[in-house]
Every structure is written in C-alpha cells, then in structure tokens.
Length: 126
Image 1 (tube, rainbow, N blue to C red):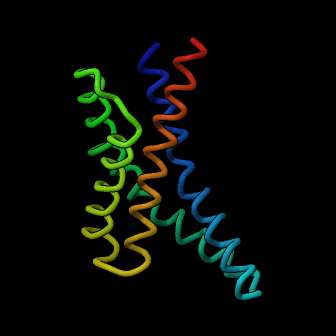
Image 2 (image 1 turned 90 degrees about the horizontal axis):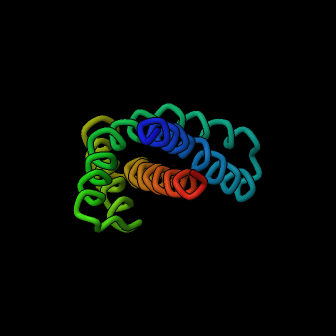
C-alpha cells in the first residue's frame, strides 16, 4: 500500500515540467505578444523532464526516506534536495549556467514539492 502511494506521488511530481512550462510560457506569451513562444517553452520544459526524474530518483526519494526514518520530515528538506538534484543534473546534462539552469532547478524543486504534497494528501485519506 505504501509503495503504491509513493509511486503515485512520484507520478504527480512528473507533472512539474508541464506546470512550469505552461506558467512561464504563458507569462512570456503575454509579455511579448507572440503566441508560439508558449509552445516553444512548454516543449523545452518537457524535453528537460529527465532532470526532474533523475532528481527524484537520486535526491528526493533518498532524502525522503532518510528524513522519514529519523522523524524529521519537512517540506524544506525535500524541496532543498529537489533543487540540489535539479541543479546538479542540469549542470551535468543541459546547461552550466543561464536561465535553463535556473528553470531546471526550480522545476525539480516543484517536482519534489508535488511529490511530498501528494504523498501527504494520500496518506491523510487512507
């Protein structure tokens, strides 16, 4: 039962590229007045979704289990692990600096937040 809830929470965390892509794309589409920039930014975010997956696998889930084991679970710890993982994997695979680096780190942190939020929501229901 617990494994199913964790797997479901990881699935929800993979929605973060869509959320970040739609929010940033909508903002830039409104600011610049070009509607096709929304699609371009959304596709860039989806193309970098592997950063969120790697961050979840190597940083967020181990941090979650460690913090849960020592009864110190908090949003800040999981979000920090997500942002650190996003920054590391973004640096290794995509960009060493610039806006893409920052967006990938924020996208991974949002993924970690969605993971913990959906996990806590599912645990309360059970």
